[in-house]
Length: 220
View 1 (cartoon, rainbow, N blue to C red):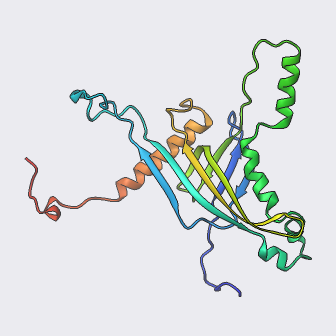
View 2 (cartoon, rainbow, N blue to C red; view 1 turned 180 degrees about the horizontal axis):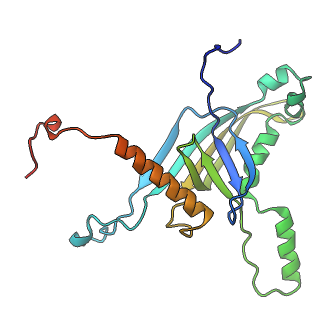
């Protein structure tokens, strides 16, 4: 069934992978369908948690924000028209390629692992952990957030005759990287500060209501 001619174009949500050092875009991974819900949790970083009354209103930094989404992947539409050029990958591996693109974000690149092994074999005293690229969670122009993936689970629900998954649900847990987590002027730090400034500008537009709306004429 064709979509309505005047239906608004729905933006895609997803992850953009960038080089943490220079911000160069390495890859963009769009979710096949935008999730119906986005769960957000903010944990305040107060300085007065130890009971000091003089510190009750002081903030040590931005809150720790975590996100949780559930996304669905389904190759049914592509398998219905297997001869179309854009559908050949789905015919070959179902949604396996989409799952692999997400899963690869959790693995150090194999080439870097091989390089580290070679350094260790030559007697290098210390081999640093592999530096992963920076994921950005993109949910509209107003929310481009540097994140770290903290949870990732896959529920494969249907398979083709070759046992390739053709329908799956993915749960992603993300922690927003603030200036408490990364250097202030780094790519991630700059993106976080831009996001906070957007939030402050949006909050300023919300206005307020008179105290009479609460049934009070004053506070003191």
